[in-house]
Amino acid sequence: MEIVGLGYMGLESKNTEGWRTYAPEVLGMAVRPSDGPALLLRMDDRNHRIAIRPGDRDRLSYIGWELLNRPAWEEALQILAAEGYAPEIADPGLREERAVHAMAWIHGPDDVRHEFYYGHGFDSHTFLPGRPHNGFVTGEGGFGHVVLTVPAWTDELNHFIEDVLKFKWFGSGADTGKRRFYRPRRNHRTHAIGYSIVPGVLGLQHVGIEVHDLDDVGIAYDRVLERGDPLMATLGRHTQDPVISFYAFTPSGFPLEYINAGVEDSEVHPFVEGKPESLSIWGHKFNPDAPKPSTMYSAAESVTSDS
Image (tube, rainbow, N blue to C red; front, side):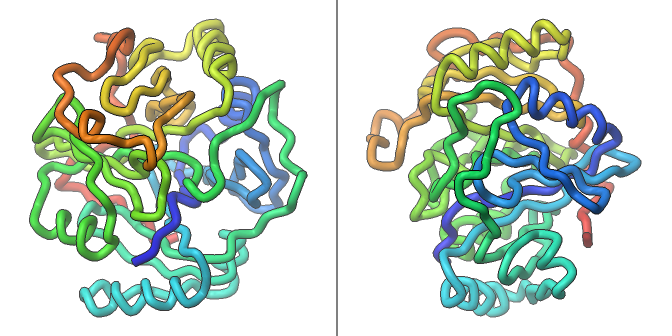
């Protein structure tokens, strides 16, 4: 399966209004005008990258995987069907909502709705950041990464990620047996999806987005501190994927990692893909008073979306 990258994601939130200022003023995203209930956030010339819809809880609704073109999309559907996943084809209304040529979706063994699409709408030279900003790293690498929480790493989930989606394993950081990171084969990022293994728990653990300029990380960090938003981890540089980043809680109760200078696939070498003994070279001090992400829930409760 030739997945390009993480193309978009959808969230349900109890606090969509909080995003109207947080997304542009802290993150530098643009809020796209919308006639519907969804708050659409832009990071580049694409129609949107993140859609946030009002709801009675905070949760991940879906993640969208971009295919290169229609033949690649049709091949992906054949692979999914052959593996017993029976993809459902989006109707015209849902295609318009996602702003894509075609889309199909399945419920994965991680209790997440995975959408597969091609032809994402865009309008060249129209992205205007919400604050002075040097831009986000998107393009063929997708818009970033998402880390999900699962109660166990099962054979079914391993088969889905490695054999069905054909994702490449990157590593597990300093927490062997507790984390796993993957990327699509044609993706330059070290990882587009990760899994945090916590017994009895499912849901969204965090989202990562990357910017071109380190100063934009520093400005966002200052604004988080000025607002008094809770941090999950302070500014620091990771060991295995040596980015500089910090983790702060969003208005929807999950942490967002704000990143600069990730390594690309061509730069990954055995040392980076090995087993680091520490999470970070410096910084990333975890806040002992940080709340549990509200987008995580008991594994006995399924909240996968059909919308």
